[in-house]
Amino acid sequence: MAVLLGVGLFAGLPLLSDSGQVDVRLGDDVFTAGQVERLAANIARDGPIAIPDASPERARDIYLQHLGESPEEGWLAFSAQAPGAKRTCLLQWVAAEGELVDPCSGRRYPADGEGLIHYPTTVTGGVVSVDLRRPEPAVATRP
Image (spheres, rainbow, N blue to C red):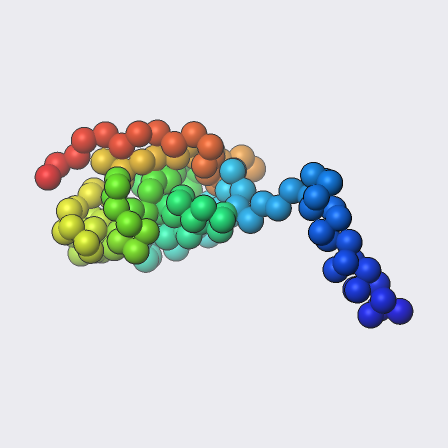
């Protein structure tokens, strides 16, 4: 019985996809990162958290950063690559200097991601979310 059900579902997928009734979304436009207390503690210990893009485009890898006085405040999300850089050039956190470094160009960015594309963050009910629909252009940073 289970085998027949599995075969039926597998056979029906092409029909559903042709009908426009199936919406495959591997990456959400609003990413729920998790509980602020836990994330803030992890970032304080290890630095910003790299979050790879799960969408088919794979174009929105981000860093989640916390620079606030309390776990509820001071959340930032910004691109994990320098503007125009290849995806393989993931910025590296250098804890001793409190900076991100582009391994391909050597360019440095401050802990707040100045000079990188930023994404709005919100905290609701102790959970931080990132709105990936509204990228904010990178502003000039130091050389």
